[in-house]
Image: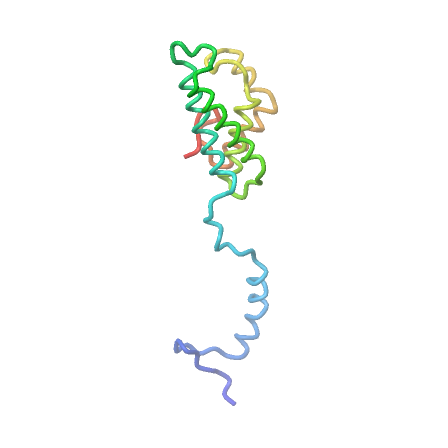
Length: 153
C-alpha cells in the first residue's frame, strides 16, 4: 500500500499528515459556530426604535405650545419609547453593538443630570459609575467619549 494518497484536488496527503491533523479537527469542531455572527443583535432593533422615539419626543418637547408635553404626538412618541425600552430589556445583547445600545440607554436613563455645557456636568462625568459606562461605550464601538457625545448608527 503506498504511503501517499492522491486527493480529489490533486494534492497528495500522507497518512502521517492526516493523523497529525486529526487533533486540530477536534479543536475546530469545538469552536462556536460563527456563521450566524453577522445576525442582528436582538437588542438593536428595539434600541433603534427607542432612540427614534426618544429623539422625536425631545424634538417635540421644544416646540412652542407643548410646554407640558401633552401634544398627542408627544404622548405617542413617549409611548413608543416606553414599549421599545420594555422590549429591549427582555433581551441579552449578543454583540458589541448590542452592549453599546444598552449602555446608551442606561446613560440616558440614569446618566448625568446636568446640562452638558455646565461645570456640574464635568464633575458628574468624573464619578466612577459614569466613567465605567463611558469606558463600556467606547470599548463597544460607541462614538465620542461618552454616550451623550454620539449615538449608534
